Image: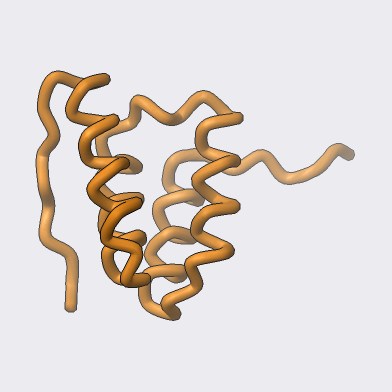
Length: 83
């Protein structure tokens, strides 16, 4: 029995929790894991990362992630989450 392997839904839920708690450190850890697991091209995760960084008041990182996803994807669907 190995460890738990997170999927996109797990990451989305975890990023939302970090956003609500303002937990930037944990959010950055998740961002690293997302990249390591090969999910960095997922549009929903891209939006969740941008949202998390902005809600944790790391606007420079939020903008950086937006620019990276814009280049990788050619576009980005900005979805509004609950305030």
